[in-house]
Image (cartoon, rainbow, N blue to C red; front, top):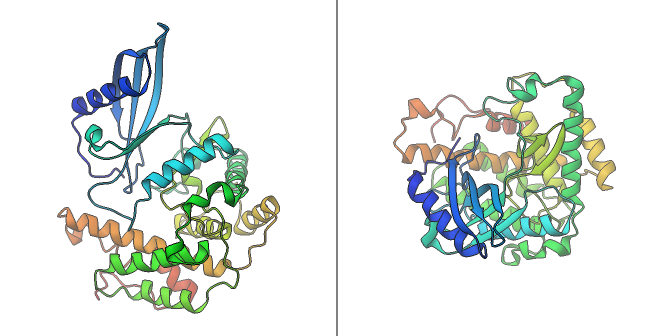
Length: 362
């Protein structure tokens, strides 16, 4: 679902064309066209697609399909956007690892161009598995033969493994030592504070009980290693049966690799909530087995990491529900997504809590 940001198309394309004239040496006759918001664009950043054309300094015509990501300036889903860190990490992954990401082109911190800092990537051909409706119900992945889905699933898990092979010293700048001694301590404290911020003094029974459980059952091993954050098949671009790019790094951290595996498995459960899973997509056990074989690590604390995944996802849904409220969408139209959703049902099931009820009140 697109972020509720309204832009004047003519003003935006003109601003981008003038800006490209500054960053591309010798370029002239620059035009920017076909401005659009991609299908499935999320809430945490504004994302635009466009086509840029110009004549190079050597006189040759150039045409680039671009993706522009703009730092959020209004409603924020996350406590902190880490927007600049996203760009820095993508630059490292693009230039110094085998993790498939879109080629990173430029970063601009001058807010006068688009109203906020932004960065530009080269658009990669491909499509991702849809979230709405869930890919297990309909869409191109649903309609793909099972044997092809199997190959796509294998490539997706291998892309996750590639992320987890990135040496920590290459991405040490992500660390937030003011939040804790290890990467896991840091990201846990970040989300504890996020819950306090998102709750706004109100009671959220299942999320609060989950936090209590998480605090009482912290893993003995507290890793410091790259975590993609929003690690799932829906954030991977596929083209001609192959992985093209790993997308959406808004939840990046040094929280460790098993955190991504836990998120992957929890989101798989979420997207198959009351819906049969597609043949060809690996089972839970197959996913764990392939990940362990590819990383050389053991998944020892998955119950904790899956509960932590549900806790984080619950906070995201809280903020999205509050966003709808802030835009005047009625409870009847937006539902009770803050307190009654599949994420909370999954958490209640895992932690043996009383499940949420329709329009549950504090």
